[in-house]
Amino acid sequence: MAKDYFWVKEQADGTKRVGLNDEGRDELGEVSFIDVPAVGTTLKQADKFIAVEAEKAVTDVDSPIDGKITKLNEAIIDDPAGLNSSDMEKNWIVEVK
Image (cartoon, rainbow, N blue to C red; front, side):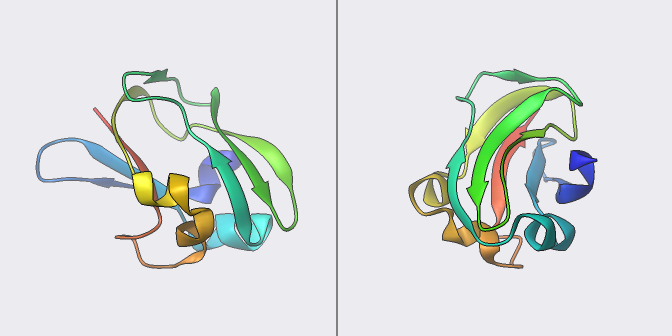
């Protein structure tokens, strides 16, 4: 279910950027808090990825991909409102290798 909440886009350096897509925004509503694992954390597809507090749900959301987190989008951790944007440059959460 949750993997449908995210887009995954390969970057020029071979990492994959993961962000919240339109379906995720529709299902969750406006996001007010996000808890993201630290850089270096290994993600497994279908295992817990992030915890989100939003207008329509407070929930743990599963990872759409396998890999190790190499970078966090600090801007959305500080201000989760960026997740409410449809701009992929703003609504990405992590980069994974």
